[in-house]
Image (cartoon, rainbow, N blue to C red; front, side, top):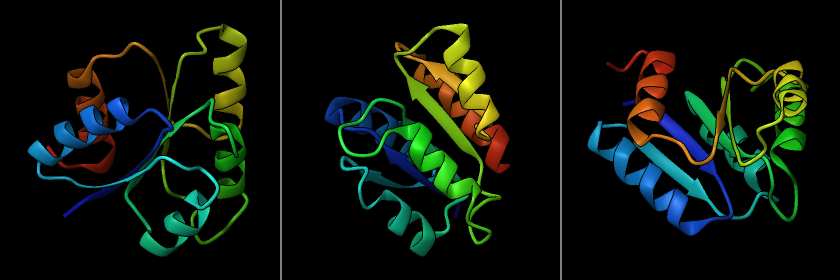
Length: 122
């Protein structure tokens, strides 16, 4: 079974994404705190990581950069889920290795389609 880790400090968003992915038979790990995200990602080796950009401890860009600099997890695709909708934000995100840039509010169906396409779980 495919595994996705979602890191977001908003409980409602985590719950929505978790419910949607579980219904699609995808194993989901949700994290509200970003400080231990890298440790969990290294341990769990998911098929995909979905990161919120703006979080209190480490932001999504920082986590993505750390992932891409770690050879053990650098090949894991990363989606950035964010309220930041400027072109420059998207460019920065893509430069650090993000596979998909998704702005909030977002469509759960579109997100699920992107996840399934990325992890090959259609």
